[in-house]
Amino acid sequence: MNRIIYILVLAGILSYPFSAHSQGGPDPRKLLDKLGRNAEAYFLLANRPSYTVNTYEVGKHIFEISIDPSFNNTSVQVPLTVTYGFSNKVELFAGIDMFNQTYKFDGGKVSGVGDANVGVAYEFQSSKRFTHIFQTLVKIPTASANQQMGTGKADYHFGIAEAFTYKKFGYELTFDLGMLNKRPLPSVKNPNRIYTQGLLDSINSFYDYKFEPEIELTFTPIVNFSNSFLLYVGAGFTRNTRLNYNTTSTFIGFGYSPSDALSITLGGSNGFGNTGNWEATTGVAFSFK
Image (cartoon, rainbow, N blue to C red; front, side):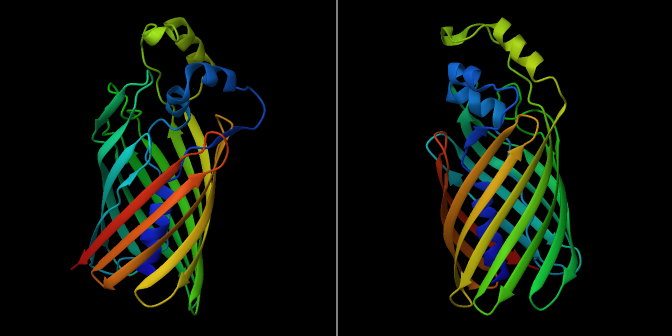
């Protein structure tokens, strides 16, 4: 069950649709409306991968390879993750977005290799019903910043997760803090007659900072119908404290694990508000010694 919980929760979190709502203070909404949805995604999402802590552990001296494709009407992502159980309480992992298709600031489509990451997770508490994990990772900027596939800068993530199980029921609760490097603005002059370099310079002055602290909270109830099949529903909330924007989402899905070595998942998510978006997710994981 733990293996399926991990993949389902990960698929749900990685598939967060974009839904931004201003919370007062300096308000870039008029500017974003003028520049359009592609520019909005450029400023607020920056085509960054989403990372979340989880309580699943592969086991001592076990390798796991997982592939978790997701897509919506504007983007496609195919992340690959390799995890190794260093001990019963510590695991190491590394991943890369093997393929990413998205839009540039001017609305043109771009695709290629996305960002990579390395990290470590530590189980600091475990009992019959509860498990608690601490995780930290670094995003490695392998995506091309010149092609606007990524920011070209490293990000730093920290998280704590709690899992609870009782008979057929359980939940996973996670809290993440991301220290996100600001994405540089492109140097362009009036493409499509929408904006000028002077406007971009003025935006760059408005966003005068280095890091965007971002917090993320998710809650995922789970029903385990059998040893190999479960259903989950969940909700998540993310706040970018520097850009003063929130993201909200709900997700649902199921998982099937025909053996200890294989798990398969299918799910979807949807955002709240006028800028919300749907996303479909799939996942498959293989484990071996």
